[in-house]
Each structure stands twice: as structure tokens, then as C-alpha cells.
Length: 335
Ligand SMILES: C[S@@+](CC[C@H](N)C(=O)[O-])C[C@H]1O[C@@H](n2cnc3c(N)ncnc32)[C@H](O)[C@@H]1O
Image 1 (cartoon, rainbow, N blue to C red):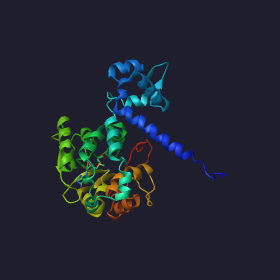
Image 2: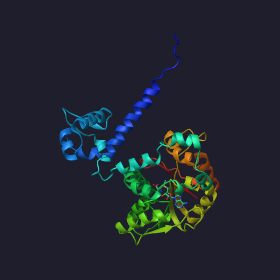
Image 3: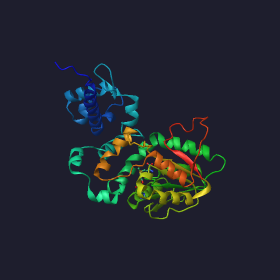
Image 4: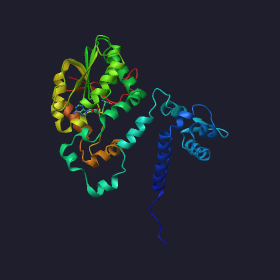
């Protein structure tokens, strides 16, 4: 008899992970977590939703089994984490964002793309805007941003500018623009600029008006690889945008350098991709569908670091005494 040299448990684990993910996505799609704030039975949820009581009970049991619900004697409720992120009544409900990202990074076309290759036009133009729905991405990301990254960014910015308040801040490719809107609310004499594609600028403009910030924040429309981005900024936020300038990286670096005041800061968030494009797996897999469609824009950490250095940006090392850099995704640079 053949004696296996290896263990095949990996494949069981992968199939199990898929089932866990299917359960999770189904629960988000069906908005299950908005009915389970308090201890509840499947019967009560069935009455409120019109769903099948027997199968709801099986569903809740499985969700509890993977740690998304708590289970009592025939009753269920959200874990504290599910309640905070998956209950529609939470101010940082992530359901829409989760479903959007699942669709955006989905590998459902994988077999077809492997067999037939990318879309010629996407390869030719290599522009993220032809693949991604940036408006919807910006809209659904608002609650995700408030689930931690806005708070940690604001904390660090307050500390960096504690003696010398910024007068003008740019959120380049800012999406909804909430980062700059939060900052100008802290520094009343500071003005903010959100630079975005026209299709996303509509959203930023609407939010600026809703927050009563039209006197302080303006929205510039354009393409940052070709258009002017303005100047005299004490802070430029470049969060998640450098990959979209891949074919124009030097031009954009140059523009940012000249748009920054002598004592200004550049804040950069990238994906920290390893040189062999193996890490971090979340980014490699997350970008895979768009790369199979034809994009080729993901920049390695080394490429970003050397472009920043070459254009005169120096990384700011701040003592993490108060833990202010904790939870911060990006890095600050000065001239
Ligand atoms: C990954 S999102 C990041 C959004 C936001 N900065 C954040 O941190 O969540 C990239 C943003 O850059 C914008 N963008 C990409 N290429 C652009 C270009 N050439 N000109 C202007 N905006 C661009 C997109 O519209 C999108 O909102």
C-alpha cells in the first residue's frame, strides 16, 4: 500500500474556511446581526423577518460555532464584536463595506481569466479608475475609516502639530475626505483641500456641505497624475493612492514635494509589499482580481521607499512614548 509522505489536512482547512466565510457573508447579506442585539430565539427572528424558523436555528447555531454569535439555552445574541461592526444600528456598521470589498476582490472569474487572459484595454491604459468603482468605495469606506484609522491618525496629527498648527492640508485622492474634515475641525484656522476624480468629488462635496465645512474645505477635481494639485500645504495626506500613480510615480513625488511647505509633512499609507510579491498575503490576494483583469499597479515597499528618498522626503521617527503611532497604518515624512 502507498504510504503518504505528507498530510492533507491543509485542504480540509481551506474548504472549512470557505464554509465559514459563506456563513459570515450570508449573515451580513441577510442582516442577521441587526436582530440579535439582545438574547433572542430563532422563532422571534423568524416572526420579524419572515425567514424559516427551523433553518434560522441551524444558521444561528453554526454562526455561534464560528464565534460570530453567543449561544444560551435555545437563545442567541451578538458577540460584542458582531454588535459593534455588523449590527446596522452601530455608528461603525461595516456590513456594506464588507460586501463591497468581497465583490471588488472576488475571484469568481478566476478560471476564465486564467484561460483567456486579461482585458487588452485595461492592460493598455493601466488605470485603476477603469476597474474600480471609486465613488462606491469611498462611500462605503466611511464607517471603516471611523473603525480606527481616523482616530489614530487624528491623535498623531495633534501631537505632530501641537506647537505649530497647520494652515493648509491636502487630502490627495482623499475619497470621502473624512481625514481632512476631521483635522480642520480640530484646527479652526486651517483650510482643507480634497483632491479627487470628478466622479468621487461629488461625494466629498456633499459630505463637506452636510458637515457645515464649506468655508474651510474645498474640493478640487482632476487627475493627480496630470493636473496641478495646488500648493502651500503643511500636510499632504497620500493614503492608499501611490499605486494609482504607478506609471507617473516620479511626477507625483515631484508635485507633492513642491506643494509642501518647508516645515510640512507628507503622510503616506501603502501596502508594504515585499520585493518578491509574496507578502502581505491579504494585499497580494486582494489585488489579484484586478491584476488578472489587466492592471499592473501594485508598488513594492522598496520602490515606494526609494522614490520618496530620491525626491527628498525623510521619514519622521517619533518616539512612541505615548503610543501615539499605535494603530497608525502609514508613515510621516518631512522634507
Ligand atoms: C484606495 S482609495 C483611497 C481613498 C482614501 N485616501 C483612503 O485612504 O481611504 C484611492 C483614491 O484615489 C483616487 N484616485 C486614484 N487615482 C487618481 C487620480 N489619478 N487622480 C485623482 N484621484 C485618484 C480614487 O478616486 C480613490 O478615491
